[in-house]
Image (cartoon, rainbow, N blue to C red; front, side, top):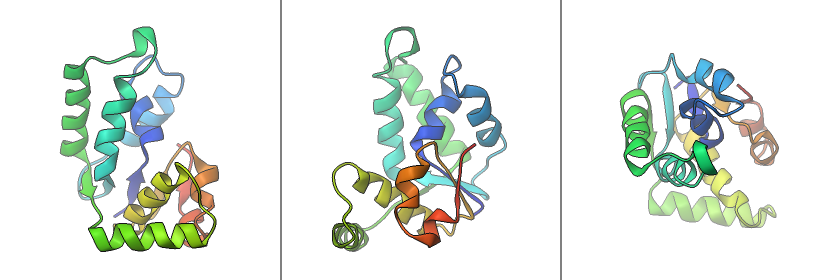
Length: 141
């Protein structure tokens, strides 16, 4: 797999008035399932994110579902099984990862599982915490 997309890139790619829309859309637009993926959890994160944006940026439930359909059409969806979840959480805990950063650790694990060459994220700092195998793949769109 060539590219993995974090939610921090997917949401701006869908929200036209977002300040980062153009640069995020530029990396998302050429995707297809053969070369790009995201985590299954990102479907929930995108839905939650776009339906809670402030004011005029907020998407309706129907718009949010259209965004998810677009993701399912253009991205391979990567998931972890229960044993993988447990192992990643335990490894993260042993390495001092606390709080919500665990969600980024799970996303990074999905990217590694998919053998993504590039992890597109606007949250570079968190992803770089997960060691060189992840850090060397991180790119800002």
